[in-house]
Image 1 (tube, rainbow, N blue to C red):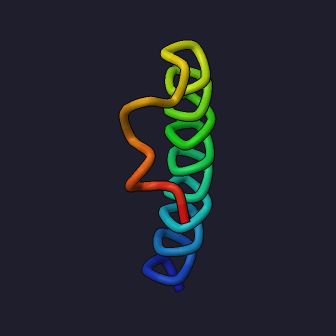
Image 2: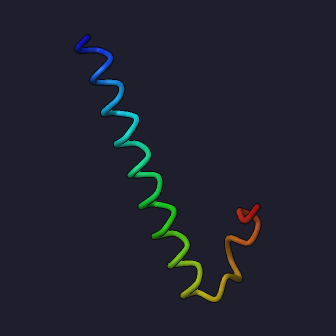
Length: 42
């Protein structure tokens, strides 16, 4: 049971980190004018 709780917390933590990293990268690209990093935009 402990392992399930650990993986559940880990998954939520990874989602929060991914969302924060994406927001930071988006704001940085917007400030630069989006000349670089255009290849990463889907």
